[in-house]
Image (cartoon, rainbow, N blue to C red; front, top):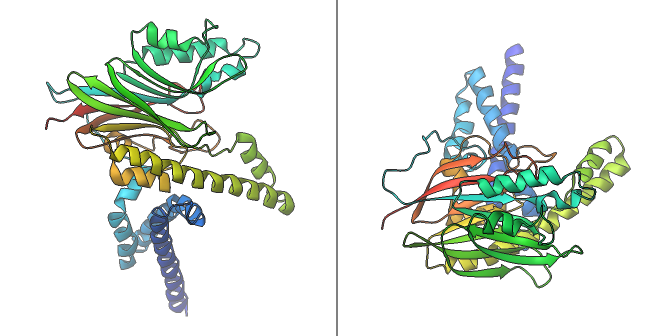
Length: 372
């Protein structure tokens, strides 16, 4: 009798493992489905990391049981390694470029308007100034900054001067809107190399989200740099706290859950349109490209997947660990990225956890300009 129960239990675990495999396959399939054509695919894709993690747990379970069923989760890991690698990177290079090669270091950072709106009474000014100085003094050749804020009438927030003019950098600033303090807000590219061409990609007439590009001359080679800020998830810390606190209250939990789902759905659809428009422009580029920015989407999303099908990801190729970039209540989210095309190779990647004054952590990558 005990042997019969053991066999039944093993069959149940096998069936559960098979269901997880189908979950992984469905999640991978949904990565390719445009959310604006079938929005539920966005939620299935969002769940893919959970399926991948549970598959690893099954691997350990079958190993402990010394069962040949271990082949099933092992095959998923081998065949789906590219999806695991999006979530956790394993690179242990020394971060040095080959002698004599041309290199380029790029910093990408959502600066959250340098927390200017938290500075109503001047109490946040020192932290904002520290943040601005950190950016200005970073050794990167190119800065791609989202939610950039510049107020010429302020000694603290005159960031164009403090970052650009003082350090003799070329720049291209696309202003999304001007606030009541007459401060400019938008996205910007600073470069120590000359900007030879530039432009903006608008995602809608009234949409503050956009991308800009600049062709820079790096010692005779032209590289096109994009920085993009895609549609926000529009989920605040309070929304998450409200959902957690509503657990146990069925009516409140359903209300808060529907609110989160509605916002996620809206974001999936908007970013799906935006990334397609961005890729249309990238496909026309006559030069190698580096695409930086705040995607507001995780690696298991249509947005990320569309870019990854065309370009290499600097974190995957040269980073280590989880590489979370969201500095908020939801852990392990990597929503800021740098992608790059042929003609370039990432050899070093850093997430700057030492600078935690924004709701995003800065990321920087070093590239070799490969010889033709």
